Image (cartoon, rainbow, N blue to C red; front, side, top):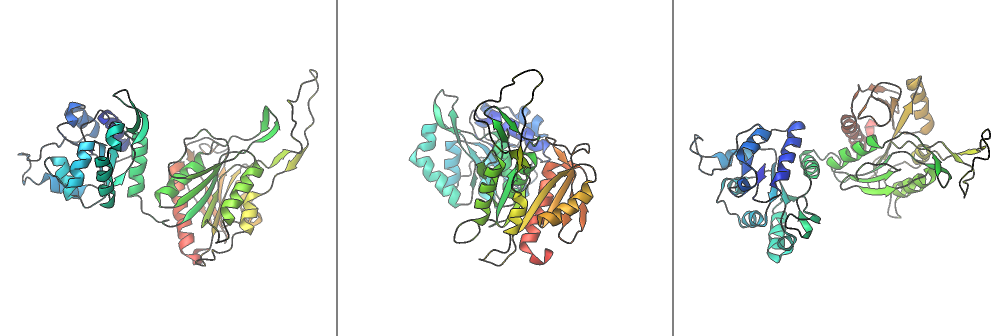
Length: 408
């Protein structure tokens, strides 16, 4: 973790904490200017590792700390990267420990710039950024917003969660590179009148984790989602919808693509689509006429998006590879038997079943336990685990099916 001399260094402390909680081992390397904003004691306490900041460290037996650090790290993150530090990196300077190890680095480097907007927009900085990008350096940010100097504009260091996600994407094997996935998530809402609707408890968390896992694996993702409160996944093409019919239209458009051929290699439909909608939506709010009466609602069935998509699966004309469709089924009671019947009825390649009455498997939870059913009827039972881990395993299964047609 390299720190340049900017006020945004205080945010790097939060980044170190987040990365350690995720299981990373952190070695802090700070410039002398960085230690004007955060102390070495703080960096050492948060990282659990001694601070490195001396190019010539007498305690190092061979004096080659910059070479060892450059080679041992899986990833080097520079946050904040000041205008001065970017300039020195672009010129190949090595006059302190951080720039020396960056010059010796042959693995991935992620840079999070932070500076005054005028400095970020200066032609010299633009040239330096272009040079570093051509050299293979990864950039995240900067972001627009208020600056410590009181001005506003683009120059804020990306938030720690954003930098952490960028780091994960760099380090994740690209098993879906060049592939495009369609994912649906969240609930749908079927309006009764201007103030009421029929819906369900879906939070969209499972679809969000699948989107992130697919993006980390190198895929392009079109995410079609109902009303949710989750932050947009960085890098996904978002299609917000409300009703089941709107979700059907958006899903078919993404799946069928253009005249040049379908755009998506696989679809994972996690959305909890309402089975029914009111036959007629009232234009005015339904009024309560007296204490005993209740309105009579006539419902009609919504289209079956999973079944319709499965009917349009086939192969991609451009390479003859199969297109994979995965469905999700939130069940109660005899979930497994119902899941087998549903997979046959829907015609999908894989169906992930979860019993929403089981502890830790309901809507809105951070965990899930699923049973995966394939076309041949085989079952694969996954124990209760985080939705993030479920997503990683399912994305790996989809990548295998897309790459090896015989797996179907």
